[in-house]
Image (tube, rainbow, N blue to C red; front, side):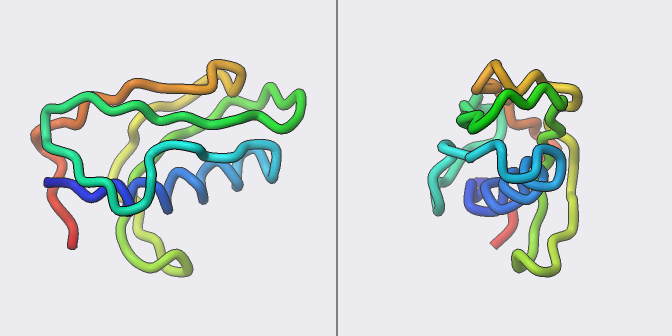
Length: 95
């Protein structure tokens, strides 16, 4: 099992770093649990006309000390508003 809350924190941080405050993460929800091999939806809202591509990553640790564990996708157009991610079997569960 893979906890979405770890992914949520990282996506929030990554989206904020790349697009400043112009992107708001709407999914995944905190504490959702996902299974390796399943496909999940990552969704966001664009709060401006930002065209800066997004980098989606997952990480572990407290928000102030995140350690990036892997890349989900790079150069994602912010206007898409969503990304489907098939969780690889190589993703290690974090508690």
